[in-house]
Image 1: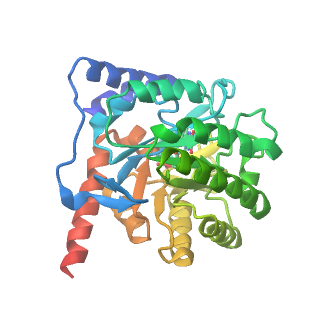
Image 2: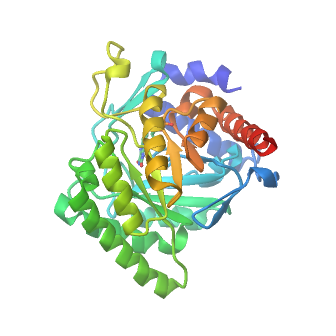
Length: 345
Ligand SMILES: Cc1cc2nc3c(=O)[nH]c(=O)nc-3n(C[C@H](O)[C@H](O)[C@H](O)COP(=O)(O)O)c2cc1C
């Protein structure tokens, strides 16, 4: 089905096609043409961050920034859905156009810039949704909040979403908010994570439940930086690391139309870098905290490769644009086959 629709969508501007697809999915859901998919196969379930994921394949952040399409997306068979990035106040994001397809490379470049309706609007959407599966909420800072006050934006979002999420992702790796990735530097990251850990402790006492916190990192880090980040995540009792966000590197797409556009590159050309970050993290962490692998996963074998590199869960975004929802089941089945074959040996 998606193979038939794709040429029509690809004839449209990338962001228009994005909303048309999500709106169509929503109509199909409202009309009862599609229904939430519940995973019935217990052998596909995975325990991560103390949560029981019905399968290992999730939706990466950024596709449903405001949580407007949670129920419709729940019909596609994800084991979890991550919404956001959300910021304390609404903001329009960067001027259009800001999303570009590079079809020869099965890639996208985006510089959306955290366009979103603000954390309160997201919470209203979450409250309205009927979805009962695992929901992650990805939080960030407003573009006009000075970087030395960024922690307060994360804390505002953390407090607001605390009772509405199964886990929260602290996004410090988008290339489209000026200076955001500075928060990955040791000194800044130590300060941010201490503030988040202290607030989580306070909220945990208040709510009687410790909300798992994941941190999402960039692929554009050298091994020393990856080491330093991993050490800080362990020190500050973070529950998972999501690797990776989009890349600012362009070597894998040089010469292609749109390759020069500013922003983050996602999809097939990101696979090697994202896989390498997962491999390095797995070696450093030795199981101290789980890894959620994301970046360039577009086939079942890509999914098993990421799991074999040390990821407990994976997420997809750009692969959905090129492959449609069939990608989700491909990945779920490939991981299940891999688990079955490793448990036989
Ligand atoms: C259009 C677009 C918007 C995105 N927005 C966000 C975002 O708001 N927050 C975030 O953490 N990641 C965001 N991402 C990054 C994805 O979650 C993912 O980490 C990245 O695209 C790599 O995975 P992929 O190759 O499967 O797309 C965005 C990606 C795309 C393509």
